Amino acid sequence: MSRFLRASLLLLFLASCGGGGGNYSAPRQLDDACAIIRERPQYLRAMKSTERRWGIPVHVQMATIHQESKFIGNARTPHTYALGVIPMGRQSTAYGYSQALNGTWEEYQASAGGRRAKRDDINDATDFMGWYMDQSSQSLGISKEDAGNQYLAYHEGRTGFARQSYLGKPWLVEVAARVGKRSEMYREQLQSCR
Image (tube, rainbow, N blue to C red):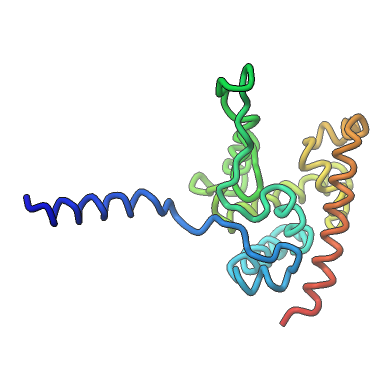
């Protein structure tokens, strides 16, 4: 086999390994909802579909995704280290736009998403969030517009939220308040988008 052909095959192989299914980078202007949807119109299509199916407003979805992954499709939790240097795995199984845990994602796949749903697909990730938040609304009475409390239930799980486990985590209450403020900011911005 010629050197050129070998080099071409190697390059083709490496190129096929690198892509992995899409652009997982964050949009450039995370504080501007209109800029996000101009740069990534597929995000708005996915979130509108979720809003129609589950009733969770686009701005609530956007604020939650911003907090969970900064719109990075293949986001993972950091590694943990023993003695500061020995890798011990990741902090949790959270992955993708929605940072869904393995067990919760599998529950979603079994009940609403289907086996082929993927956490790094914006359509599946927003549908998962809609499914989860809709259940939180039904079982806990949290308004679908209430991004802060929806986020607390999302982070702590519905059982944790019902037990008010977040009250022992002042940092988390602050994060939820920021999610609520960002949701409101996105809501106002989305009203002026074309």
